Image 1 (cartoon, rainbow, N blue to C red):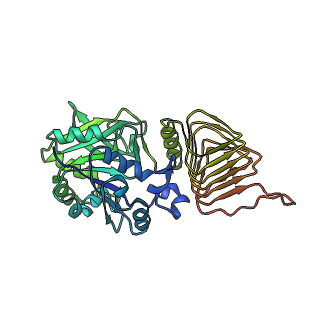
Image 2 (image 1 turned 180 degrees about the vertical axis):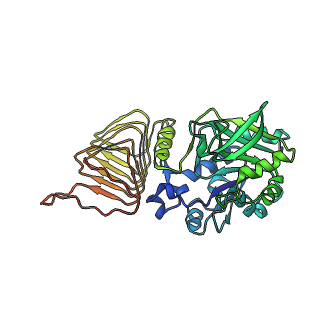
Image 3 (image 1 turned 30 degrees about the horizontal axis):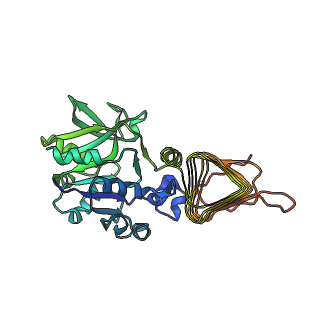
Length: 357
């Protein structure tokens, strides 16, 4: 069987997820209490890939190295390569050429989530003779993506974010390549936005007579680069969890699929799953509704929360109105003040959004 290596691109700056990404890499923002990056690593591990190169940026690379480590927690090897400038996906491929060597490889965008993983696609690529395999999905807004045109089941044309798309098949952000992709990336010129586009490199392979095999994804796929997508991904992942109570439960009503990690504690609460509550979190006199992920060491006290993500160390307390549809960053404190005269007092970073009833 052909040995596949892995390439995960985690060098983006995450401007669409600010202010969270001012202080943290977007690929480390958690979905259901797990960094998005880990879902990509685990998808590759499940596909039998044991040697993965992660492209990182100078700004967030140290944080990603510290969190993901050397790969030993998954029984694999992780390598890291710095991409000095975000000059496009094809540029990232060239940056990783020395690390990947002459092996065929799977490429995965680090902020993507695929429900069904890549195991079947990796097996198909190992067995087939195609020069590349690309994953596609029908989308309602194809002009926001790379778009593929098919004829008789074969890829004939790829266009990056076309103003007038010829199809609704978007590139999902998972690719399988043979080493010829390096020549293709070297052969192309920067696009009008100044980047080496992976769509242009694949088109170069097509124009050179190479077979590019398409596969349309039928399960859900999410690009978690924006706040709304992150919230939806959290819902989709929580929909698949199983009940697992390892923490302490005192005088509380816990309904449905709830994950309570060891070291977490709930007191006098009503919890309605799907919900995940991380290690060290304390939830008291509170209601926690469906599709909520409470990170490690959070405190939720005398309030109601639903359909929200709380990152590690957040404190939510003494709120008169339910908190819902919210993404709360690390160590953020949201609480009702008892001081008089009553007034709103806020310390808020750039690009935040606050709605007050």
